[in-house]
Image 1 (tube, helix red, strand yellow):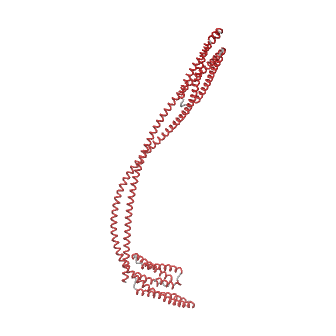
Image 2 (cartoon, one colour):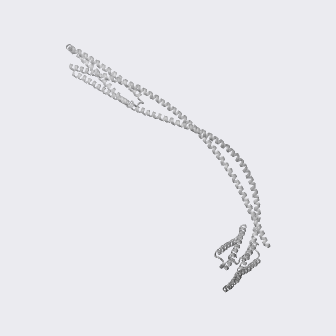
Image 3 (spheres, helix red, strand yellow):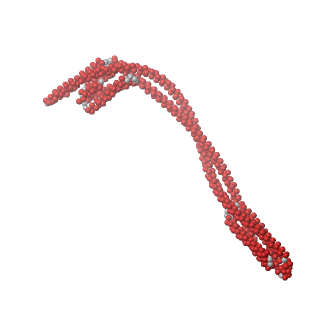
Length: 594
């Protein structure tokens, strides 16, 4: 309805309005149209009456303000309808605030507005013409004023016609609007009564809730007070336990530091002992390696000596065989000599000197052979003794390596003796060959020659016997010296090994004691650490419980404040709404009375 009126005004005065200000009019026009559409939607909507009424009142006030600003802007833009516009605005405002007059009063007000709006612009338009006349203008100006007056009259008539049409349409629209607003007022009264009933019930519920909340708040305050007291007691206990735990922790840390220092000293001493033990082990391992090498060398020497003994036994058996052969040959010679005693007697007679020489020579040869057998027996005895000494020497050389060269020299000497024995055996074989030659020849001359050869062989054997005996004595002396040295060295080594073993046992005992002590201290340290951890866990649990209690207290206080705040908001809202509704009802009653 106002939309058509605004369109009529904009068409009639479109030529006199500034384009910039026309934009303001357009914006105001769009705002008014949106407000009208919103009001129509709220009126048509049947649900949410309390909310609809509130929004409807707000939109009507906005619409009134926009309408008033539109008229002021319109009057300011045209400059000609300044006086007419406020009158219309006042009439319209009085109609909106007085709970909408009847249709006849609206029509009278519109007619009075039209008359005022028609008269005041007329006088406004006349004022410039009357002000122009006293200025003594030229004739041209007079003609122009006449033409302008005619145009003004024409414009006035056109405007009156247009305004009459527009106002008739507006009156019908306002009448319809008044009817709608009356229906709306009835609905609003019903909603107001419903809202009052709801407000009363809400107030009753709010008072009951407030009483419940106050009781709950008092209960919560009592619980908070008891919790604070309990918290104070717990804090005191925790503080005491914490101080006690700190003192215990300090004592434990001091004990742990002392134990750690002792453990470091023991570990350093243990490392030193381990180093010594390692060095002793290395020395023992070196001595064992030397002993193994000596055992190997002695095994080799024993094998060589066994071979030599075997060769010696074979040589002794050969010598025995040779002795038996010599004896058998002597017996044969004796039989031959007995068989030829007669011939010898004759020969002795003839050759007395030769016979005596031959008998002496034979006796000497026998004595030499017997002596040679005795020497061989002595030699075998010496060899047996030498073998025994060698065995003792081999047993004494179990752990010595530096005698290898001496053993090699001894082996070389033994080789030389073996070579000498071989030479002797060869000589004996030669003697046997000589005897064979004597047996073959069978002549006296040959016998004499054989005896001479035997004498020569016996002389050579005697000559070779003396250096062999000297060598054997030297070998025995050397063996005795080496045996004594080896015994001394073996005794020293055994004593040293026993001492080292005792030291190793002592070191092992110390190491075991240190390890047991370290393990014991480590166990005590672990027990202390576990006790500290348990105390820390207990303190942490108590702190967490305190934090939870504090959070619960804070949450209860926050809930209390939030409940009070919500109650205050709710009571304030209901109070404001009640006052607003009472004012609205009173205003409408006053309007109806008017």
